[in-house]
Structures are given as C-alpha cells and as structure tokens.
Length: 328
Image 1 (cartoon, rainbow, N blue to C red):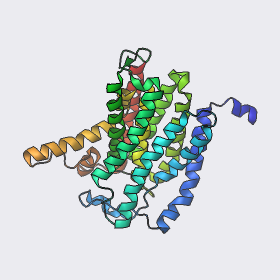
Image 2 (image 1 turned 60 degrees about the vertical axis):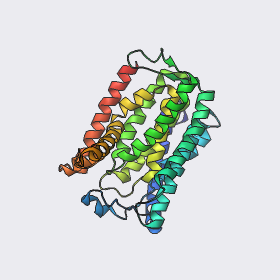
Image 3 (image 1 turned 180 degrees about the horizontal axis):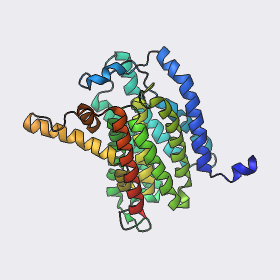
Image 4 (image 1 turned 180 degrees about the vertical axis):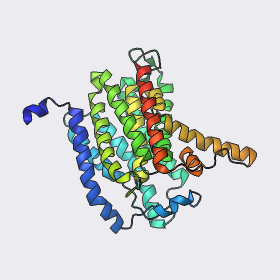
C-alpha cells in the first residue's frame, strides 16, 4: 500500500483527503447549524422562488475551509510558503463569517455595512499584497496572453500594489455575487481551481500552490455533495469571500490575474451584469436585465437552477481550456 501511495502525486492525495474530510464534516456540521438556527435569510428583492430556501443552514463554507486550514497548516511544516495562502483565505473567511453572523443575529439580510465589509477586505488585501510584492517575484509580474508564461511583463511596484489590491477585492466580491444559486459558485470555482492546478505544473517552484489548489478543490467537491440543488446547506459569505480571495491570491503569486479573469469569465460577467443594471437604471429608470446578477435574469426567463448551473459550468470548462491554451 505504501509503495502504491509513493507513486501517487501529492496533489491527488491532498485532493482526496480534503474531499473525504469535507464529506464527513458535512454529516456533522449541517445538523449542528440547524440546531443553532444558523439559517439563511433571503433577500426581500430576490426571486420569489427563493423564499422556500429561507432557513436553510448557512456558514457552510466552514465545511470545505476547515480541511484546507488544518492540512494547509500541516503542509506548511514541509513548505512554509503555503502559509500565506492559507492565512489570506482565513482572513477573507473571517470577514464573511462576521457578515453572516450579524445577518443571523439580526434575522435580516443586513450584516456588515458596505463600508465595514470593504474595510475588512482592504485590510486583508493590504497585508497579503505587502507580503506578495515584497517576497514573491511573480507577484510583480504579469503574464500576457499569446506572449507565453516564459515572458512575463515586469511591473513597477507602484503598479503592482494597486493591481494586486484590485484583484483581491474585486474577485472576493465577484465570487460573492456568483453565489446565488444552489451549487453555482461551488461548481464554477472547482473548475477554476483545477485550471490553476494545471497552471502550476508549468513551474516546479509552484508546487505548494498546486497543493493548496488541490486541497481547496477537494474540500469544495465534498461540500457540493450537500450544496447542489436542492441545497441542504449554503456556503454563505464565509465561503464565497474566502474562495474569491484564495483565487485572486493564487493568480497574483503566479502572475496570472488576466487568466483568472478568462478562466473565471462567469465571475466577470456576473459582476458586469450588476454594474450595467445599476448604471442603466440610474440613467433611464428601467432595468437592463430582468434581475441582476445574471443568473437571476435567466431564472426570471424561466430557466431552472440546474440548467443555469450546468450551462455556467460548461462555459467555465471552455473558458478554462481557452485560458490554458493562451497561457502556453
């Protein structure tokens, strides 16, 4: 048995360990979340079909994050470089947890104020950006499509810092917006994480990033067993902000923010749909989409949740393949 395991890539082992632990945690934590009445509060202006989801356990992001935190900390004894990735994910998850907890405590959809949430995101982003720009060469570079990963642009620090901050804050919010249907954010993010697992094979110095992506993808797959339609638990901001921050951090440490935007095109489109809706409504008093973010627009057109999640996931698979081709 040991001889067989020696031939199995470490990222595969990490993936399956976190997958199994996440599955087991789901069995334990979902009843606990129900017992403590950590139920989802639905938006008043959201789709009427979502009203039936009121009370479904939330803060379920802990199910896939705990294995990553524990095994990431253990792996740091072999490669300390994984620790900043674990800590930045933890930082964003804490901001999300505070938001989720306040919503539950107040029994409303009002958690942290937008200013408080942004302040928390900026604090975590600032600390990670300082580390990345100071100690990781790739964080000061940018790989451009068609040019190849061997010829990155070297960025001045004055540009690298705001760029890192923009991607960290931007993608935490983008994944948060995408987390609006059962299994949507989890399915899309699993594919994007697998994309980055492939990206990190291009550089042997990125082994620790590959392990981190594998852990998070494995834990997320275990969570999806409980989160796919009809969801028995939601990840909440605890999970969605952590996922967005983790993806942005991985992209920064590999010099691939542009390829995160390509492979994660669904996040970008979801965010743009909200921006377009707000701007168009302010100018005309009318709605450009039936409802934003984009997945709600298709719900209003009569698509069921399963269809939307499947199509958005297929789009992500295609965009991930395209991104990898452009990276090579």
